[in-house]
Length: 142
Image (cartoon, rainbow, N blue to C red; front, side, top):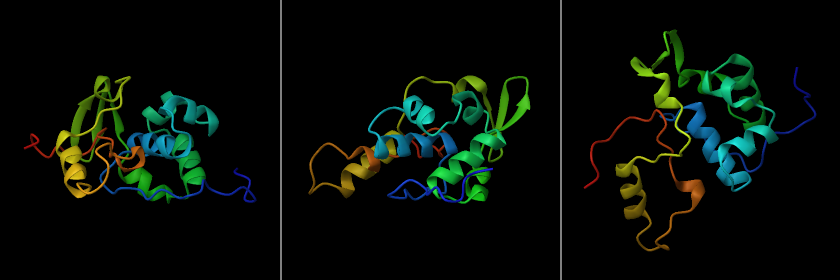
């Protein structure tokens, strides 16, 4: 049971309704410590393999530290089908799809972010980048 006197991370990062708990955690890591996901998971005491498998304990801990409702995280969590296959919002993926050691971004989303920030510096802020792990594919970037 979590200590109710402990507070969530601040600032609270909104959860994108299309992202997975893994991509959300990658954005949290970028915003709060400026590092990849693994050091952040150690800091918040979540095991990487449990988050990758969308285990209840990992999702509950992530909800607690992020201030996001557990139901929101569960809605976009991949569910194991056995045989190294996962169901994510009605689509079946292999375990390898989720096991990339690299943070991947949707090229169409990056182009959209670039258009939105044309008046800003050319390098997007890490907290604005939307991780693509499990997001819908928007088609090739223009």
